[in-house]
Every structure is written in C-alpha cells, then in structure tokens.
Image (cartoon, rainbow, N blue to C red):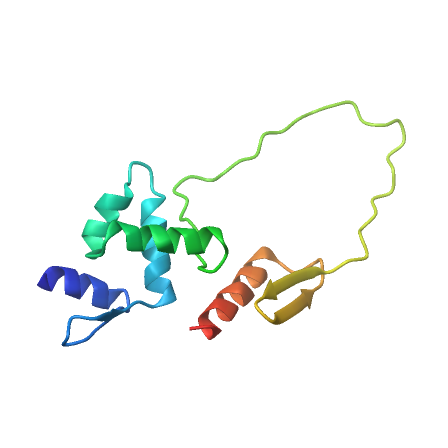
Length: 134
C-alpha cells in the first residue's frame, strides 16, 4: 500500500490519515488516459491506482461528457493523414473564410477566439478553464 500511496502522491492525490483520498482533475484524467492505452483494461488500471473499477468507469463517463479534460496523447511516431489527389476545377475558386469565431463554452463561461488561434493556445485555455473549476 505504501508504494501505491507514493505513486498517488506523485500524481497530486491528497491522502488523509483516515485513508480518504482527494483526487485532482489531473490525477483522474491520467487514470482515464491509462485505460485508453492499447491492451489496458479498466480493472487493471483501477488496481494500479488502488480504486474500484466502477469509480474509474465513472471518471471515463465524465471524460466522454467533457467534464474531465484528458492529457494530450504522446505520439511516438508522427501521425499522417492520407493524401487524396483528384482533378480540381478548371479555375480555382477563391477561398472564403467564414466570418465566425471559435467558441469555447465551459459551464457559464463563453469565450470567442479568432479563427487564426492555434490549437496549442486553445488547449491551454481549455486546461486553464478546467483547472479553475477544481
């Protein structure tokens, strides 16, 4: 149990003398992310974290509902999208950019960002919103 507690403390889980634990959103998200690895099972991950499988399943539901922000997966290899080559129109049409903004809605907070906002900046804002709700 000591090794498990050390592991949990390294994730930021508060462990009280009574045995109760307070899980941060980051620690919950890491546990859920571990279940998404190839070959991982909810039961095995729950055992590693010292929790019941149904608790981990509840956190997975929260993640699916957007209530728990998961860490970005670390890719060992670069990811590529397939390239489809087709005959285009004779004259290229002018590209039109919609006159809209990117909207992030988190509970009662709505943020509008320009379309040129980078994905990394949007992720930073989403993580900040999630952290502010703890």
